[in-house]
Length: 282
Image (cartoon, rainbow, N blue to C red; front, side):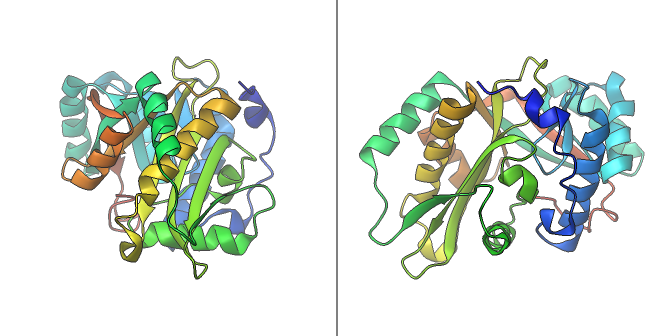
């Protein structure tokens, strides 16, 4: 596994306007999050996947840390929150006037990698479709197009410097249709500090496909390819994501890939006016 400290000890010069993509509110939050990450990257309590700085876990006793995140980047996020802690913490945040968003936490490990290998061995892209990967040399126009595909499907993508692998260990893939445009995306990032118990667990998500190209298995295949690349290149051993309870399509994709719902929740508290007035991502 590559030493994640390489991305924690340098690379903080990546703070140009075109490093941030999405709508204006998302771009501002990405920029604020990266600047915050620069100041907390040595603290193993925090994680960063290119969208927001998050807490590895949170309880009512850590509400000051949550409020710190809201103040600095308009949103506080915890990836691993227990049910009892979720109730108590969200009651406190709601009483303070913050808006709560939440997702069911899903996780896959050995079963997920086996499922990904099987799917990739059994599945091929339809004729004319091609899989590509973001790299350090990917043109900015491609980054913008990928972010636009995500935005159209309600998905916020990481900052460009993370997608390129400059400031986090990441794999971002996309599919182009026969006539050239990007129609499906997926990605994974090792977001946690090297001293965290979650250091080898990768954030995984962004799975979405343009409505005109659904039903071809593009999201499942991209999700599988992304997992396998993260495991092979960066030593990721498990993969987690957040899914809304009503999102049956994403739940089905995750089940096919061995990524199952856990007892945890993914919880966000937002200053919704500052954050643009709506959900940050689906």
